[in-house]
Image 1 (tube, rainbow, N blue to C red):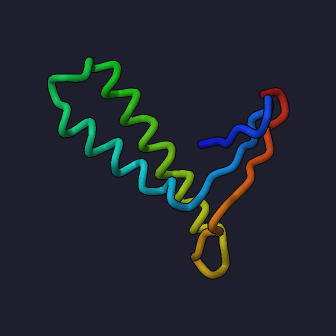
Image 2: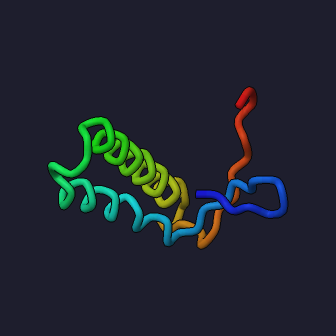
Length: 78
C-alpha cells in the first residue's frame, strides 16, 4: 500500500494494512461464484503476499513487534 505525495509515489505501509489479507480472503470466500477464477486467484495471491509481508515485519524484530509505519526503498531495476 502506498501513499501519494504530489506526483511521486512513496512506498509506505502502516501496521493497520495487516488487516487487509483477512478481508481479501473473506471477500473471496463470500463472493464464491461471483468472481471469475482469475479474479479469485488474484485476490488470494494478493492476500497471501501481503500476509507474508506483515509476518516478516513482526518476525524480523527482536521484540516481535512491528513498527506503526514502515517505508520501503525500491529494489534496483524496478
